[in-house]
Length: 142
Length: 422
Image (cartoon, rainbow over all chains, first blue to last red):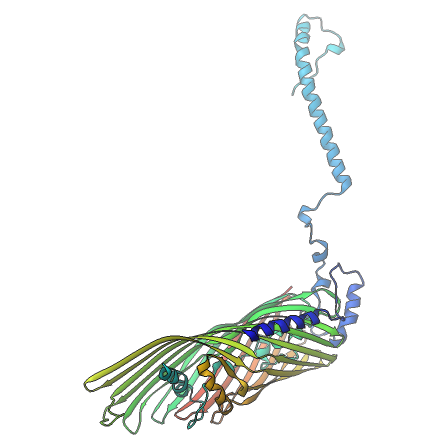
């Protein structure tokens, strides 16, 4: 058991030394346009690009972080639930507000119309016809 | 109890393996020191090379520094099929031949590379089988003295390790890495020996029949570590090296030993069941490799590993420490080496592999082929851009002449694996 503990302690020390290596630079941000070029210049000095077998070269030596931009760009949020642009959201809300106003006005007008309708109807029943201000709207309440 | 232990640990292995020279006190054969397996199917196709040229998750087993040159996520696995043929001769009185087969998960693992702007950093983890214990032996026949022998030995199991490690490039031309290895495995051992004497009248020949039947189940666990370094001076040469620390193995053993003696007028039957544990320390391992890339479609590589098996020692329990003084006479230092190559077929998603390896038997044995020579071949097929289907095959044979039992083995092995990168 002592040997096992010793092995783990030595491994922890060694891994600390390894991770503090100064040559390798960890890149955890989205690659720029120059990243690929810089990376190839820094790293392909020990591999000859294989023009006869480029699929194998891609398989073994091409970094995923230069190839799969979705990791950086679409990691969050996804396209499916992408938020609408600000001006579009405003437009939608504006339209929604107008619709609500119209509905509310319609409901209000229904209530007013009902109270006035009886008198209008009674008036019209009198055959007087009335002026244009008393004329009831078509399909009211519809 | 002591007599039973002596029987199990000294007498039985000599009869069963018969690889130790007779006529003296010798330590038990230790299965975990022998019959090593290559790590990964690509390496298997190239004879077992990988210290300098491993380019997949098997770097965590061979040389963790090579992980730093892997730039894509990887998930991979392989299974292994063994077909074993054997011939045996016991005291020139009984002989036998036969075959057996075994299918096992060989390895499974993956790599997690970290994005870098310069250099490389990756973590690898996985399981691989390191040693196989599988073998079979049968013999039957009557000697000149009229005694009939019938024996049957079956061993199934192996040792494997779960490794987790990392590699990092520390300069434009060098990388370092390390891995922790957690060992596990088991062995199911069955031994049957039937000795019949129809005409004996004097002791011990007065015993007309003795039947021995032993069932032993071992389970292994352990820990070790490996430190690797990779040098890439230019695009034509790669140099790799590693040091593996001593491996501490904890062995739990469950034994059922039965002996049935029959003679005229009486029968004597004994059965012993007991459980015991051991701690075994396997020695340091030193390995190196070189890979040459003369062109972009050809890879040539070679590996060698040095182990002084005489430094194998038991740590616990106390009563077995006596075995340690016998190690020098029973084991030897070995250099296990392999060489192989990989040819990329131009304009095709195909890679052809071939290789050769030699593994000396760590016990001091007699016989013509005291090393296991293995010829390997393989093919890798790239499916789409990110998936490979790999097939490898190995053929080897070996023999050993013991004090009473001579053995000859021939092994054919097929590996089938799949790897996916993303």
